[in-house]
Length: 435
Image (cartoon, rainbow, N blue to C red; front, side, top):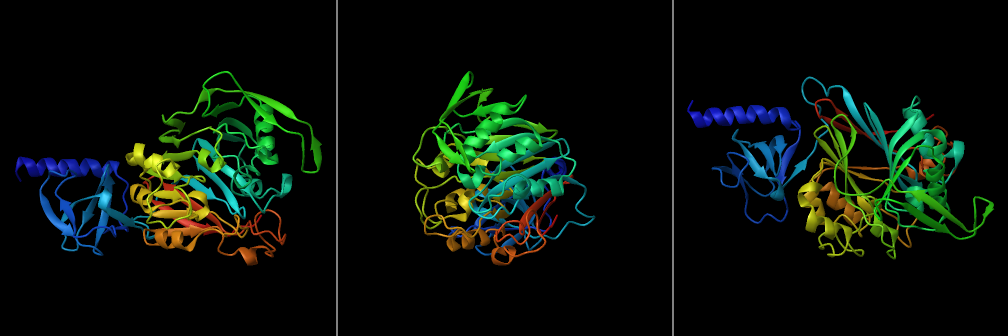
């Protein structure tokens, strides 16, 4: 064996320690490839050409390094293909020897028409959003709180709580968490939406002892939240200013969650846009060697088919302009409940996920019940899709589900759970628990 071959062998051995193994997954060329994808000897566009991947042809995925997939062709040839022109098709088959010990768990909770995400690691707990438009129980009837208590009965602390934006279907269930747990860090755009859920949320943050609040508006000092006189939950409330100390301004530097786990906020904007969707905090979690992308209600523009380019001033357009390399993730919690306002093909190409989670429910957004079929079709062509709305009619009358039973609400039945092992293996499954 000559020196060059020895170096290649050593390099492959070393990278096999660093990359996420995915022996059951395959790689296929993107639909917009006109001829073929070149397979290279090493992860470089200047390395020798060892084969091609024709449109529709699949190759076994051995692993991944930045910008490249390491693949095995049907002929047995090993090489590298660019992530720009390929996508991963995932399977749920575990690798030989088992999936290993669970290190991280991500639960996308069925809260009806809304979004609620719980992330747990060995040394941290994170919540991303918690709201609903139609499953609005509070206190002991809070569906999200009931789920957390069911899967994590000994939990006492939420280390990080992220509110993507202040719409009811993302915030309404969060205030109860402050009464049930110690909350240490809160991340919020800072954009005020004068609704009962956001008012209760900001009040809960204000009253939480020892909490640190971060927004996208200012790095120090005090943020003032002004709310008008109104009636919330049957109680008349006067006009009120809530003064909240700000610990830091959100930036794009990684935030340590725990050992070998970080959170990076890829988009944060606290400006007073016509729609709070434009304020969505887009978050990437790096859990070991696995990336999870949480899109909130980030949009690409108006309702268009996935093939349309995002507008340049949309969140998806901004992310593609600034941060393509940062978007790649194995799991994507899809933006805006699977709406045609989001998830354009250009963004999905950059993310190149294997698993797509859609949290939605039966209540219409305007005249539309989400998700849109065009978006589901696009996601299904790229990987495995899991939805929280698959049994909504039956769930309303289910006598054994998380939270209140047989309550006429769509939430509580179709929870999506993602587990990541200590060997970076991913398992995604539906949980139909009851408490």
